[in-house]
Image 1 (cartoon, rainbow, N blue to C red):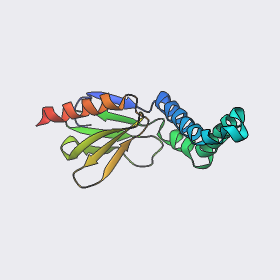
Image 2 (image 1 turned 135 degrees about the horizontal axis):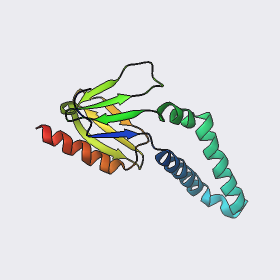
Image 3 (image 1 turned 90 degrees about the horizontal axis):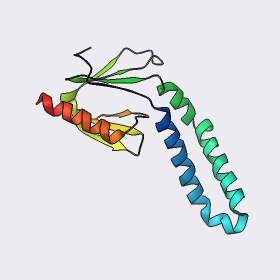
Amino acid sequence: MTGTPVHIWTASPRAFALRCLALFAVTFALLLPGVPFVGGPQALLAALCLSLIYMFVLDDFAEWRTHKNATWTLTPNALLYQNPMDDLDTHQVSLMDITAVKPRFWWDVVLRLSDGQAVTMRYIENPRQTRDLIQSTKDKMA
């Protein structure tokens, strides 16, 4: 590791649930115009079924299982990613290589790197606070 941890994030079940709820709400909103034709309970059931299909057929739940044991460790000069589900060693990103930190929705944080790549911290609770902490730690380095 590259210093003592400033903060450690783990994948949040609450963030995953929030993502699932948002998916359901968007699906139901898209089905609302059909309510007069099929009825409210049927539209609600259809939204639920479509959300479940998305979660299990398109592997949203599998993605959660892959990331649920992952940790992101912020040190004074790097951000480390560890996941026992990965065969790879710890991934490390220098804070100096991070050009932008953006919260995405209410469950992810996207890191833009100086080489043009983007890294996503998945299922993070309070992405805006995470952004602020990473940015303030990075600012202390400069």
